[in-house]
Amino acid sequence: MPTSTARGEATRELLVSTALRLFREIGYEKTTMRAIATAANVSTGSAYYYFASKDDLVHELYRSLQEEHRTLALPLLREGQNLGELLKIVLNTGIDVMGPYHDFGSNFIGIAIKPSATTSPFGSESAVARARAISLFRQAVLMSRPQPPLAIRDDLPELLWYAYMGVTLFWVYDASPGQARTRRLIDQAAPLISKLVILSRLPVVRKIVEDIVQLIRGIRQ
Amino acid sequence: MPTSTARGEATRELLVSTALRLFREIGYEKTTMRAIATAANVSTGSAYYYFASKDDLVHELYRSLQEEHRTLALPLLREGQNLGELLKIVLNTGIDVMGPYHDFGSNFIGIAIKPSATTSPFGSESAVARARAISLFRQAVLMSRPQPPLAIRDDLPELLWYAYMGVTLFWVYDASPGQARTRRLIDQAAPLISKLVILSRLPVVRKIVEDIVQLIRGIRQ
DNA sequence: ACTCCTTCTTGAACGTGTTCAATTCGAAGT
DNA sequence: ACTTCGAATTGAACACGTTCAAGAAGGAGT
Image (cartoon, rainbow over all chains, first blue to last red; front, side, top):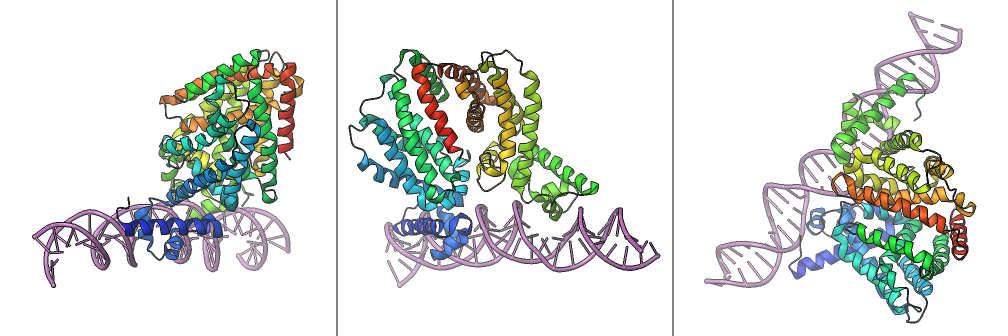
């Protein structure tokens, strides 16, 4: 399964790039394992030598998208912006990156969400990838001015990531041209979330926010 | 496709009950279409005469679970309880009903969430089923004392249903014995949600709540 | 009884994801 | 040059979801 030769590594990378291209060009279903193997000039058996399943190849797509998201978003984050603006940037770049795969969307989320696969965003096996994704939101939180209240600062990135998952879900279902409705959702929700964060300072609100934070920490095990 | 004879109706129902039993007893993957057909003493072709796909049969499971949820929850809702208590009942009965299918869970949600299928809880095609599910939460809202603020009363049921979807997602991933963690989540989250609803009356909070309600209404198209 | 006509049923066939025993490749050791 | 051995490759084979042309069942009209 792991590549230990240069030749193996080359074949592996060729398979990944071929698969991702076909996913983009002809969609998930038409991109059969045989089609990927043929397009990469290898046998289907070879594809399975490197990837345990077709889902595993989709997993490669996720990893690729996540890296692209990072490299696109990070340079746009400037210290001193308020949280709403920063959030907008991170969410919008996320949608930008996923754009070419929208038709793919249905399968996208269906595969991602299976608790079985390593692909699952919530599963324990993808903890590393999830942490990396959350760190993007941590960066946004750290750069934001004014700084979010200390009481929630540590947990906020994870919460924002959950919001991002929600936006992604919305995007998958968004059939409007160019997924314009998702863009509108982001533009409206980002400042709202920012305001909610500020609101959490209020004495009356603070108590319940602490309860919520406590609940979330408990949930994490 | 639709059954118009008594004979057809009998075959259809036999297939549904056989499929649901097999799903429960041997899980999703082992329950092949051939296995269902054989167990029901019909040919595979016959199964496809009544159900467009295996997913379609899973859809029958959802419908069955939803009805069971209703008949289990409604008699337990008593007027005058506070929203937290009522919410606990609805959420817990929901988990009760799904219990026997937890191993099934992975596929459960993966299939449900595909925007393609009529099964999808968010898709337009299952609007009727969704409305019926939401009406259970509407019932809880109507019976609760004190009554939630007028400003959000109409939209609250839908919001609570979203929360329920979140709990379900958590449940699917919950590997603790008897899904005990999900029960704990419900017991803690229900009163919190109830408190949040009360909080929405506060003058400072009210404004942002109105924005949120506005946003949600906009999202609904 | 016979003819229609719709409903329902069948089983073979197709394409798919996946597995696996067998084979080839290529570098390291001699 | 030859051998060895793990890495890499192959293509046939399997089970599954799904399709479909063909036919059987069963009732309504005559």
